[in-house]
Amino acid sequence: MTSPKVQGTQLELFAQDFFASLPTPAVAPAPPAPLFKAPPRVQPNPPVIVPPAQVPEAPPRRMIALGSQSVEYVLQRSARRSIGFTIDDTGLRVTAPKRLALADVDNAIRAKQRWILTKLRERGERKAKRDEQPITWVDGAKLPYLGGEITLRLETAARSHCWFDKTLNELNVGVPPGLQEWQLVERVRRWFELQAKTLFKERLDFYAPQLGVQYNQFTLTSAGTRWGSCTVERNIRLNWRLIHYPLSLVDYVVAHELAHIREMNHSPRFWAAVAEVYPDYDGAKAALKKRSAELPVVFP
Figure 1 (cartoon, rainbow, N blue to C red):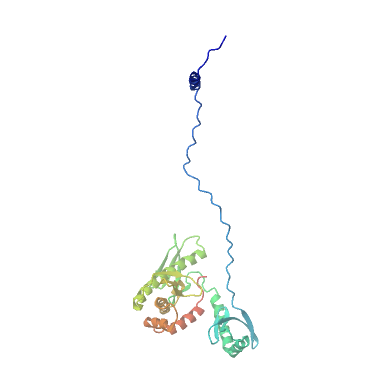
Figure 2: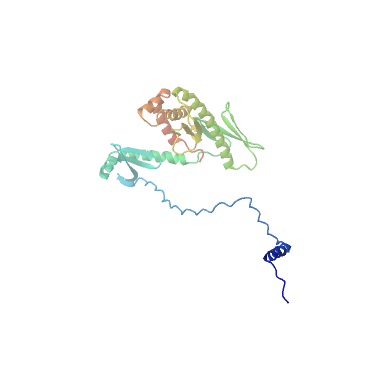
């Protein structure tokens, strides 16, 4: 028996029908697109090694025998042609020309030894007196204010308050139960700072038009060695502790800093500008230096 012969076209159609009858396989759904794309990975840069900042060396300290005493001093070289002597709370500082021999520096100190020893002794006595705790924070204590004294009055109160009686020249502070001394001191300090801010602003606004200048902004500072400063941006800073000193000395510092808006130096032109509104600036400088050496430290 022979098999029926299948044509090629019939075979192709048969195959199509067969595969069409097969169930369609399920296709896995595509994963949802992420809401946020992860940032591309960036190869980190190697760390940069920054050399430590070089701290300028302190001026050398030297010792010299003056009579029966040994005196330590700081030697600072400069471009000046003469030798200068400065005495402050840290001791003696000598400023000498760069090329001057050490032997010549010592000889100049010995030539001034009487003046130097006297000033060192006086400075030490004033510093010791100033460093004593002058204020006992009790009712009736005296506080320096604008060159004079005001009386501290403490009174029991439910809440802390602070107000000044101009007639009696008394600063009245309410002391609630449990108030500690450091809190009392801080309360009084804030009062002094507020008076300084108000007064200094008034004096700046008084002298600025007379000098023909405008300052940008004014802030208080508590710097230990500077009474004021002025930047090239015309920003003025004044030490709030000036409120302890007479108004005349406050005015000198105010005029000094405002004059820097015209001259950012201490040239003759600068001092001429100061003299326009404060002629006796030399007397004020001396008085401020003297008072600052004598006035006890009220607030640490």
